[in-house]
Image 1: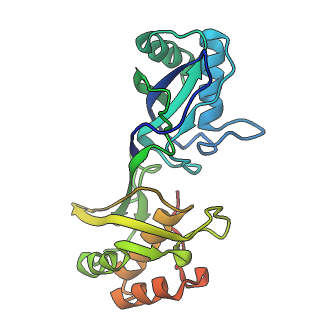
Image 2: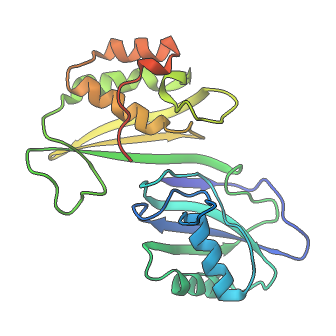
Length: 249
């Protein structure tokens, strides 16, 4: 997941706002959002801040990734009273985050009205499908292993039906809390690279499980279980029951 953001919200008087760019392997975390029992990326960042400067704060992210979802450029913001330099903040957090697979790769002062979530201009998700007989040894936690070939052209045709502004009820989790199922998908690209199919989705915002639902649908088409028109029919139906099995995290 990668996000780009612009200013919008506000901070409390007397606090310094920072913009962080974060990279993490989501495998050991219970998603981005803080959990009562801990174990989320937010929890790890809060603990690192506490160890670094003694303050209790929350890092607000541009996107709330699920369990097992990785990030190469998650944008977050947080407010601190102690006001360290961005360089010291990044170094301090990275020291206290060790040995977890979570690092801050960028830190900067942010305007008072910057909000990582609501200022986001675009979010980009990438999903990888590995199609070969041999089980992956190195990328087991980073690809969806499918031990048969998929047909690229029908998948690309089906992806075209999803681009644009649509009601994505069929392709969002039943637990999704978004007020509206209508989203604008700016692009949905599928590229073949050797044995891999790389699905890249871009939008201002996404619904819960939307990308994984679309990936599952495209794989369904690639297997020949759906035609591209079947994918379009499922979209138009606005019925979650029409969605094929969701791609794993």
